[in-house]
Structures are given as structure tokens and as C-alpha cells.
Length: 125
Image (tube, rainbow, N blue to C red; front, side):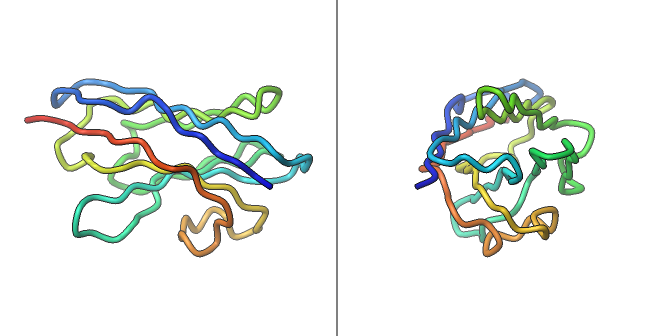
């Protein structure tokens, strides 16, 4: 079974940076996508970014474009989310998720089949 483990969250001041990591295991497919989602208290889970393992295509929600960068190391089954110029509204629990759906780029939670436990990101003003 696919397992995902996030790390790298923490407390940072506005304008600062954090790098989240997602370690994926338990699968042999080479055609999949990993997405990053976040959920703030009282809000719905929202897609942040995703990357395809087959061609490296990346997608971002508008509010993080130019500030966040997703990358992957397929040999290590690792995906990273570099977050720069962080804002208080980026505060949330961040999750990585895995799918083989061709619709992965829509960044809808229901499309993703496996999820990590989440890592807290807190941005202070």
C-alpha cells in the first residue's frame, strides 16, 4: 500500500521560507502524480500544487504562483514544496497525496487516493 510521510513544517515569520518534503513508498508504478494540499481551521482542504512523475508537469493554485515551487526526485520517491515569501494566510496543515488519475492537475482532493498524516505550517505576522 502507498505510504506518504510529510516533514519540514514549522513556525516562520511572514516573508520567511520553509521546505516541505514528502517521502513516498509502497508502490512500483512509474506513472503517478503527487499533490500538496492544505487545510486551515474551519476551512475546506484546498489543492496547492502537484507534479507528474512521468513528465514533470507542475501546477499551482493562483495564490501561491511565484512563491511556491514543487519538485521531485523520482529515484528517491521524494517530492518537495519550497515555500518562499510566506504569508499568514498560508498557515495550515499541509498534506501530500498520491494518485494515478490523469486528472491529477485539477487538484481536487477526491481524485487523490492516498494521503500523508500532514505537517503544520504556521506563519506569524
